[in-house]
Amino acid sequence: EPLRPGSCSRELELREFRDRYVFRSLDGGGAFAVARADGSLHPLSPEEAAAGSDCKVSKIYGVAGMIRLLAGSYVLVITSRKDAGSYGASTVYHANSMKFLCCNEAIKHLTSEEKRDEAYFMSLLRIAETTCGLYYSYDRDLTLNLQRASKLAAGRVHKPLWKQADPRFVWNRNLLEELIETKLDEFITPLIQGSFQTEQFTLKDRLVRITLFSRRCNRRLGTRMWRRGANLEGATANFVETEQLVEYEGLTSSFIQVRGSIPLLWEQIVDLSYKPRPSIIEHEEMTKVVERHFHDLSQRYGDTMVIDLTDKAVQQRQMTVCPTFFLLQ
Image 1: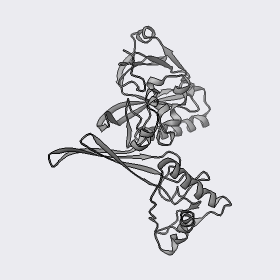
Image 2: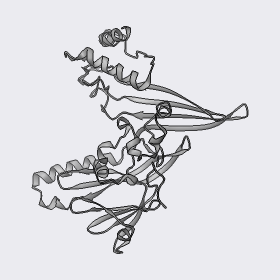
Image 3: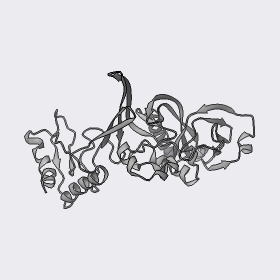
Image 4: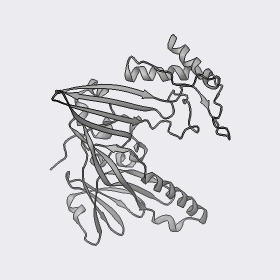
């Protein structure tokens, strides 16, 4: 039975042959193969997907994308999942474990230096396999909060999930390119990094559900100290959108809070001090950066209340002047 428009396969059969991986949807009927020699993708008919028996068979719960390195391609698949609750009428899953499938037979033709580089890149892939806080749904775009989704045309829900999604909040966006180019829409699973919690309780004999959903933006990710401020487009480091949903007697309210680094060009070089001193990066576009940041917030979220969380000590006092001046205009 064909999948409903705007949804992707919930369960897949993975067949591992010596020369290829075969992915077959258990609820949609589609299938494709990935050559282990070079990582090339090939859509398959049901008959082609069922051919052959000398293989290892397992079940997976989504394809999170592909990446090409020196020796070939690596396919990221979701190997286990957990029901994290519901968002509207759709189930949200947590990706408990993931695995990269190797299509790197060309590694034997690499030089010693290239093999060392490939080994290093593969160690980074193993770290990516253990990325925490990844959530997804098979039939709902989780990148859009309820307020934004309610303003969009109803017809968008019939598009593939990756076309509905806001690219800023798709953790695996860069890994999906080859799947998109091959038009394997039913196998493309957008992942969100953040947190998702939902609880149900009774209030005066009435059922109430509260949900907290945080979405981490992929534009300027990084660890504390090493990633600060904004880029020239106004995108701030470690931007997170948190949505609070309250569902009561058939009605749903959505409250949005966003946070990010101070929208200036600045840095905080790590040294031996307990609290490294922040410093402004002198640039002719500084005022434009602040303007672009708040213009983007206004376009996406409408009227916004801004709360300054900076330390008012001398070290960070200069960091609030430019954004405050812009807001007062």
